[in-house]
Image (cartoon, rainbow, N blue to C red; front, side):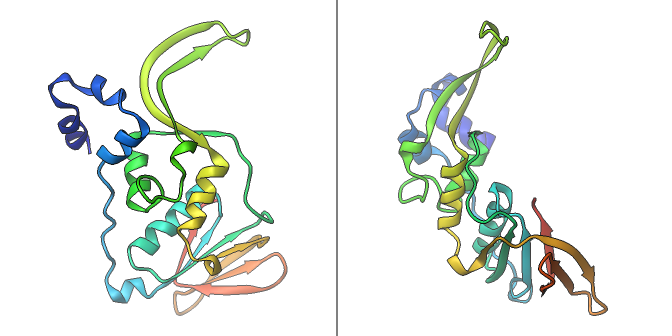
Amino acid sequence: LAQALCHLCGPQGMGTFTDLSIDELTSALPSLVVPKASPAVANSRVVVVGGSIGGLAVAACLRAAGFSKVQVYERSPGLGVGAGLGLDDASLCILKGLGVVGDGGTLPKTSLQRKRWTEERTAEGQVLHRQPYPYCATLYSALQQALVAVLPEESLMYGRKVAAADTMPDRAVRVHFDDSSSTECDLLIAAD
């Protein structure tokens, strides 16, 4: 990634790259290419516990790798609100590869703001330290909605709190919910 970014910047270095607009940046950044899993592995039943940014991103990567049996369980009744998030260029490459950012992506370009500095401030607002740090800012809720949009609707279950998990003799995992129901999977990912 660093070589690709330096190649895009030319001999002037990273300073030129930080001046790109959102459109120029998302067009210039390479897309992450998720390698396809073998059919035997991709047929595994996967449960992701946690429907926040991390869990949804894991589920989207698994789907991109060819896993068709991915189920995300989230304890809250729906999408969260959250605050702002900073996305560095590597994160944008991953999201571009998943179809979240870039042309045709599920995250509207208008929800990304290009930032060029990071600052440390006192409680009164006085700047103590300022340094170059190029990144994009977006709202938590916008990124969460964009990740949800790349997943099949039936793969997301809200209002399901996981209470426990047991490994069974056949090496499958039984996931128990707080309503006394359960499900089985071959791979359990805790992303809460």
